[in-house]
Image 1 (cartoon, one colour):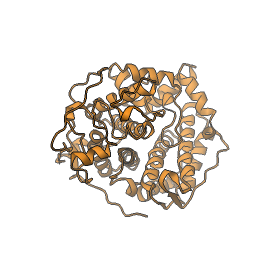
Image 2: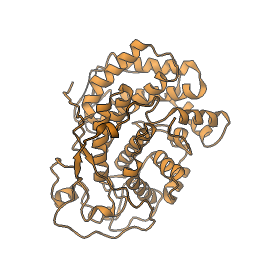
Image 3: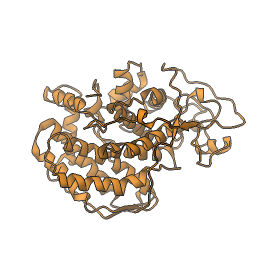
Image 4: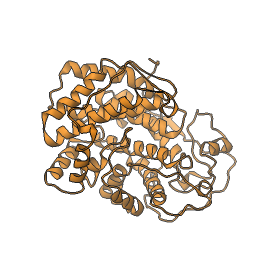
Length: 418
């Protein structure tokens, strides 16, 4: 497997401004060119212990126990949209009690999963384990708990490595979902044997974490997904050092992925990536030089990859909030603007000539529920376009990669902390 090192307490922490949490419906005009880019500037983390939870809350990856209890109550009451979302989940192949996992020792994934040697199998098996974990949480049918356990136990003694060019992203996607399933099963009395838990921990620690913990210089959705995986794995492993490293890298990458006008005339960048001049940075932003609130580094590539990044941001922020580590003040303004900006065009608004040459590739995906619930329902911000898109696409089911059943778990869910 690839060697990997964990960054400790001395890693850089991004200083992300959280001022001005008002949602603006108007789109800002073009920014004026500046002679030099504005990098994300960090400072030495002198008090990591103050930033990182002393102990982790379990279950606490993506969903908390109060959130799960709320979902169970709503489904049992037949309330909408949860019952409809539950029915969609239970009607999927992922919830089948005859689901069969397909573990591999080496998962080889090239660009766009070509070659695809176990890539789809791994991602779908992780989603199936999570699906059965949710089904167990809602129904208390032990058959679903045992199926989730069987899937996780099938992979943990077998998987050894991820190879080829998409290995980091593949590891991130599967590595984001495995801990969601494992947290629910381990901490809700599902009967997962301690020896099997230990083996699953070794899998995450030895195979998945080294591949994602040091991040990526590639497109922002890669590193954001990698940090989502690292955060979830760290919580399951009760590894405060890994959590601190992933948290810090995440806070540097978010402002380099989503633009705010307060950033200035050039998008922010991640130090050390070799993108140091305005021309280099704008090339990375697909030569989109008109900068507005909520524009993302991959907007002009396509909305699908942009959605991956937006989703990972909301997932990390939600998981951190469950742990009592509220990152929404640092990333919420960017997340809210990105959701609103992309929802506007995903809903069919005319694309202006200054945006991506007047044409965008849609396909945002089922990625709005978590951020919308946190920022609109819990924090009270108006998000008109995001709300319209979210409600019109319910139930948001799965993208078959790392997003799954978020209408069920997060729609109008008022709970976070135990």
